[in-house]
Image (cartoon, rainbow, N blue to C red; front, side, top):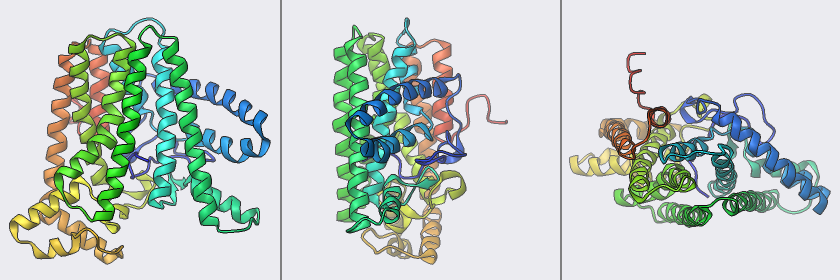
Amino acid sequence: MLGSRTARAGAGPGGGPGAGTDPGGSPRPAGGTAQAVDTVLAEHLRTRLLEARRADAVFADEVASRVAAFVLHGGKRLRTAFVRCGWLAAGGSGDPGTPLRVGAALELLQACALVHDDVMDESPVRRGAPAVHADFARLHRESRMRGSAASYSATAAILAGDLALVWADDLLTETALSSPYGERLHQEWQAMRAEMVAGQYLDMRAQAAGSSDEARARKIATLKSALYTVERPLALGAALAGADPRTTDALRSAGRCAGVAFQLHDDLLGAFGDPAVTGKPADEDLRTRKLTGLLAVALRRAAETGDTEALAVLAPGTADSGAEDVDRMRAALVRTGARTAVEEEIARLTASSLRHFAEAGADDRAADEFAALVTRAAGTPVPGEEGA
C-alpha cells in the first residue's frame, strides 16, 4: 500500500546491520522512543506468534515469523515519535506506555503498507534486503513447489501484509478500550486507514493514466505521506491526552506541512539519493516516470519555458528507461529548476510546520523533539545546528 517508495535502509526479514535508519540516513528518534516501542512490539509479537503456532506450525514459520522479523528489524519509528509529540503537546500525563502502544500499532500498519507496496511496485528490495515477496519467491524455489513463483510470492506477501494489519487493529483496539478517550482514538484510526487506501489507489491510477498533474501529485502526497506519517499520528497522540479542538487543529496543520515536506524530500531521494544509504536503487521513480511532486514541477516548468527536450525525456507513460535516459532525466530535473524549487518548498513547509506546532502551546521539550524530527526527516538543518 503506501509508504515512501524509497526504502528505509536497514535489515530485511532476516535482520542484520543497518536496522533503524531511514532514507537519507537520518537517525532514529532520540530519547529512547525507538527502543521503547521496539520493546512493546517485541512483547506484542511474541504473543501473536504463539497464537499463530497454535493455529498451524507452517503458517507460524513461513508467514507470521516473516511479518514479525520484518517489523522488528528496520524502520525509524517516526510515527511513534509523532504520537509521543502529539501526546506531550496536548499535556499528556500518566502511563507513557499508552502512546507507545499506539505507536506500535502504527508500526504494524506501516509493515502492512510496505509489504503491499513492494508487491504492487514489483520492488525486489526493502530496507537493504529482499522484499517480503522476493523472500517468498526464494522459499518457493528452494521448496521446489509447483506453479509460478511470482504468483505464489505475491499472494503470500499480500497475506503477510494482511496479517500485519490484523495485528495492528488488535493492538489499537486493545489500547482504545482501556483509554477514557478510546472513541476519539478509534475515530482517528478509522479515518487514517481509509485515507491510506485512497492515496495508494490514486497513486496507482496516476501511474496507469500517465498523469503529470501537479495538484494530483500534491493530493497523493497528502494522503500517502502527510496524513498517514505525521498529521494522524500527532492527532492520535493528542486524542490520548484529551486535547481541546484548538490544540488538535494546530497539530493537524503542523503535521500536514511536515508530511508534505517529507514526501517531497523522498521524491528528491528517489531521483538523486545514494542507494547505499536508501537501500534501493536511486533510479526507480525515474525509470517508471512515477508521478511525484518533483516530476510534476519539472514538467510544468519545462512547458512554461519551452524546454522540449525535458518534456520528451520526462513524459509520463514512457516505457522504463535505461541508465542513459535516467541521467538525462536527472539533468532535466536540475536544468528546469525543479530540484531547487522543491528544495525551497521543503524549507518553507518545514518552517510552517514548526510555527503551527508552536501554536499548539506545547512545552519546550515537546517543541524541541518535534523540531528535531521534522527538520532531520525533511533533510533541512536543525534550528541552531546550521553551522554544525
